[in-house]
Amino acid sequence: GIQVEQSPPDLILQEGANSTLRCNFSDSVNNLQWFHQNPWGQLINLFYIPSGTKQNGRLSATTVATERYSLLYISSSQTTDSGVYFCAVDSPQGGSQGNLIFGKGTKLSVKP
Amino acid sequence: DTEVTQTPKHLVMGMTNKKSLKCEQHMGHRAMYWYKQKAKKPPELMFVYSYEKLSINESVPSRFSPECPNSSLLNLHLHALQPEDSALYLCASSHPWGSTDTQYFGPGTRLTVL
Image (tube, chains in turn brown, orange):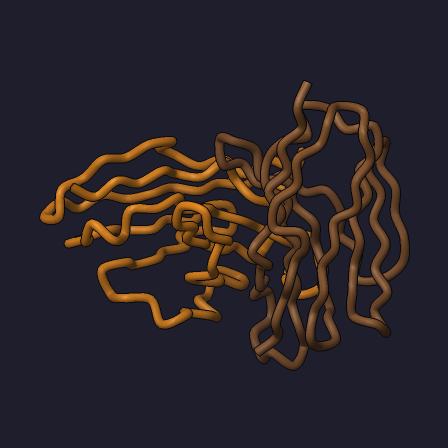
């Protein structure tokens, strides 16, 4: 099945710093989503981005489908950005429609 | 409104108990999902319902029994669970063809099996 790798696994930032999170995937995808899981477990949708570039406030994401990677940019980080960031994909070759495969996540800690 | 609700938020049960988890959405989505997330791990898919029919069962033990009574509601019936089943159970929903649209997640039910 499709493999999803996220890097770095852990990231510690000072408030106000910028960061880039990476997601590599091993096959073509129909669906790629970025989520933020807060300390209470809620998975919050950030982007649905199987290809192209999107921006939402301090966050932006780019997926280069032909090269099988996606990047999540966080600018001017805040303590509320802390949590785990997941990349999740669904592959047409996987045979399962709607089966999101999650990477292991990047745990972000933003210090005041 | 992009909200998926789940009840209860927390559940503690013994190995001989029977309990149910409930998930509800009013976004008109026709695909609904159950995921299981162990501590410090990513979510893993358990079941997919599409148009109220079970379309994917990812080899989940029979002590977990899903039910989709209508297009807005998804239940997960629990019976004779084991302590290793303790986890965060997440429900999600999406538009009819789930593979190509955003999945929205509920806040989860944190289950502890004693």
